[in-house]
Image (cartoon, rainbow, N blue to C red; front, side, top):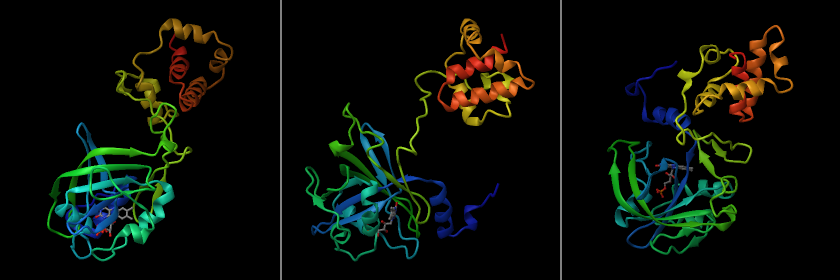
Length: 293
Ligand SMILES: Cc1cc2nc3c(=O)[nH]c(=O)nc-3n(C[C@H](O)[C@H](O)[C@H](O)COP(=O)(O)O)c2cc1C
């Protein structure tokens, strides 16, 4: 394991390590306006949601690592504490990247990127028509994290209105994670796209109190076949199957044969692993516990 002291690194090196490791980051395409009415549009991936009641987003227009100058977005927000956070999807990612070019003060990056302005209902900066989710926000606070090059400025933005393109909703009126087609920023020039193929579910542990990995019998916990993810699934059950359930399972066709061969423990663990990969956690537990009968 490489261990590096921050004091031995330059800001560029720190940025390099952190941007690659703390990723993927969602992208906020922030629209702002100055007192003279000049509109600005720029992307920020030091961004997330931090509260739902009140609903608050934070993003960070940092001081430039190169020359310690501040960004127009920050300057605008200090003049007019409002913004629209437009959520970035795959169809606009190249235009979003273009909007990050350091155009001069007063240049409207909507025009430069070819994205379309849509009047907001509550705040002065316009929305991005092409974005499928647009959040109208009032800026509550700006917290400077320092005066040196690379220092962040936390823009604490309270969401007042949420606009959602109906095309990304499911039949229940909720946002369909597969339809929103999000992209995220990683290190350097890397981005990733959330596709149907890259999406997967992890059963929420907070509905039930899982037994925990420490409660899994030693021979299973120390399996050479089951992975940490497999143990996480096994530890997430609220209770083990009952003896009656396991006995009933042992009678099913094909189950006894699992224990006939030479290396039956390997066969059992391989079978349990396949079941876990298919999300069949209860059946995996039964297979693993049949020998304990
Ligand atoms: C996808 C993406 C994410 C970015 N994230 C950030 C960020 O979180 N913080 C930041 O200071 N700059 C970020 N940048 C760079 C700014 O967008 C860039 O400095 C821009 O010129 C700022 O514009 P402004 O001076 O008009 O506000 C990002 C650029 C891209 C393309």
